[in-house]
Each structure stands twice: as structure tokens, then as C-alpha cells.
Length: 305
Image 1 (cartoon, helix red, strand yellow):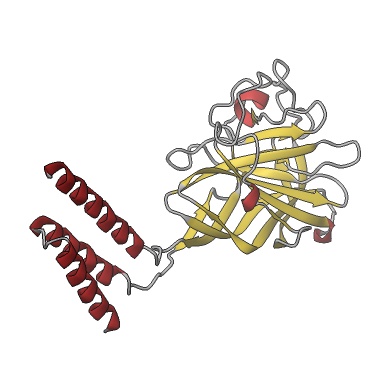
Image 2 (tube, rainbow, N blue to C red; image 1 turned 120 degrees about the horizontal axis):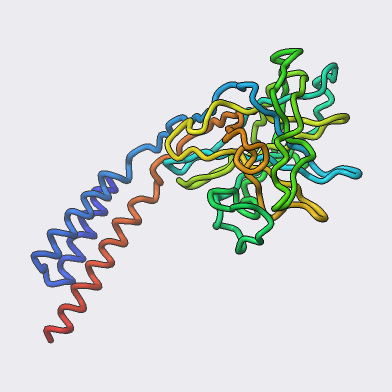
């Protein structure tokens, strides 16, 4: 009731101050009516989910932090958001060494990247191409790390024996030595890791890359491939890089196109969360529209005078 009375009073005051110009009064009434209609609407979030599907056994690629005598190695795969979205959980599937307990997974870190050339410098010439690669640097505000207390994670054993036809672990080199054909098959335990973000990662509608990284007390985590691409419209392939002295970073190489000549590949992962609802501040847009109309009316009046 108070909202209706307020808008009626405001509408009357503004119309009187402007001399009740017919066209302005019409626009003003329409805008204020829209504000009254929009303001009380509840903000309801729709659920969001994305998945590339289950592992297909074609390849496993390294995803680990730096260690003693070891470069950090990052694998990333893409997804698209058609609306602003709050991501609350990520699940991905990979191999850990045979016989290793799930407790050997000591940490998980998740990063998100824009698509190159956003957040990037010019290409260095160290790789074949940067077109459709992840950016040079991650979206810092979107990073979630178990060690930093910004996510929790759990792991489940899917299979005690899972074999991939090829791997990329150590053979990640700058051009012109980028092609290795891969490092051959590997067998390990298939595990699913779910990371829950203690603070949701909120991203605008855009194209992104998802990069999980897993620490093991012994051995390596290999992120498993999934069918495609293309798995969806605009689907890109997985990219990989090393980071450290003499490494490929800030560039990335295409796992299938550049390194193995077998792909392209996707990686097995899923994301869940909520679509960000219509902002409660949408009536401010209407206020801005009124301001623009006022400005145009005053300029027109000044020109006529």
C-alpha cells in the first residue's frame, strides 16, 4: 500500500514540475508502473548443472601442484554459461595409483579461466596456437583451495582397475618440440572427486575454462578424458601446460591437436549451482530511464528556447 501511494505522489510531483508535457507524462507513467510491478517480485534462483559425461578411456592427463623436482602441471577444459551463475560444487574423475588409499588425496584446488585473449598478454611464440586457449592467468576471485579453507572435498572409488589408452604426464614442451605422441597407456584406480565451495563462485554469462588440481601423498592424479568435442555448441578441447622455470606457462598447448595428434579431447567433469536471479535492484534501471528522459526533455526545451 505504501509503495503505491509513494509512486503516485512521485509521479504527480514530477509531472507538475515538468509542466505535464504529454509525451513525458506517458513515459513516466509507464516507467513508474513498471517499477511498481517489478519491485515486489521475489527473486527465485533456477538450478544450474553442466556435465561433459563419464570417462571414455582415451587419455589421462596430469593435474598436480609443484613439488620437489616437479613442475606444476595444469589441465583445463571449457564450459559456457548463458546466464550469470553461482557455482557451488564441482565433480571430476581421474586416476590415482593402484592400491593408493583415497586418503592419499591431500588437497584439491580449483581455478577458473577466461578464454584467451582476456587476462592475457600477446602470444609468446612458445606454442603452436593460443586461439581458444585458457587465459594466461586465472580469475583470482574464483579460485577455491582446500588448503586455504575455501572448499571441502570428498573422493569415492568408482573402479579398482581402469585403463587409459594414452597419457600426458611429463612430455609437455615448447614449440617446435610439442609433439610427443603421448606417453602410452596407464592403469590405476578410477576415482570421483567432489569439491564443495564454501563461498559460491559467481561468474557472468561467458565462456570459461575449469582447472582442477589434485595433490597426492604419492604418485600423480591423471584427469580422465570424456567424449567429444563437440559435446555442446561452442565446445573447445582440453589444454595443458607446465608452470615454473623453463615451463610452457603462461601459454597452453592443445593435448590432442599439438601433443598427441589423436584428439581433440574433453575432460570428465560436472558443475552445479544456481542461476543468479533477477536483481532486486532492477527498479534502479527504471529510475535511470526516467533520468535519461528528463535529460533529453531539458535539452530539447533549452534548444527551443
